[in-house]
Image 1 (cartoon, helix red, strand yellow):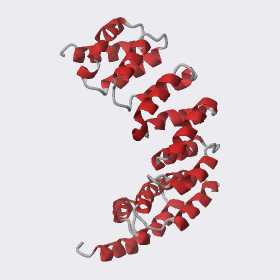
Image 2: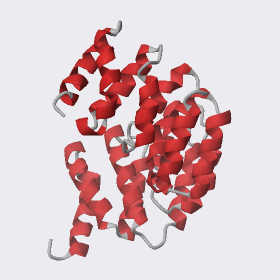
Image 3: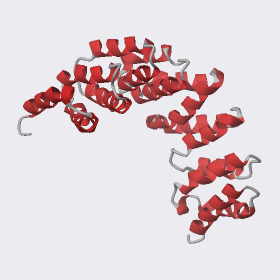
Image 4: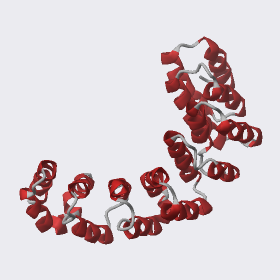
Length: 266
């Protein structure tokens, strides 16, 4: 529309009357508009008791985006933080996600306070939001909790820690150095997170050891990680992959066959 302000006004007027398919189209437009006037209508969708969960999730993401472009979010932050104590997990999840935009440092202490939510999905959303803020203190907090936290806390951290792109060498070290200390149930989660990082010489050397691990799930996850890389990035593992062509675990053998076929062409 030639007049952005008029366009936003029309979209806001349509909100109460729109069905789910139309809302899915409208909500991103409001988020990218980034105007203060869209914050509270989006907030109402996030916390509404009758809101469709698909709409709630979409509104949470776009509310965070709009808030990151807004100049005055103190009241919104306070309202979202207050709703982190709501009885409905779905609303706690959405509010946590809405608080997770880069640089939203005022929300960090509240998110940390709700880090140990009894609902695992809420806990995961809180961790995701904390990582999205990108606070240096958050990184230190999460790496400490990786040592002393409960099982589900550690799982959430391992699955999200890779997103600290600005701390890449440290993140790589956290994954590699903690892999031997975490329970077997979490090693695959740790490898999933590690697989999101660029493949470095250090990671290749680490994978070389794990391809001989006695646990099939570990070998398979390493192979799955490598399947997402270019063949010339892991050609140094060609011999280790060849040995897995006769692995006793069928999924491992199948993944090794796919990888070996690619690396042979290099």
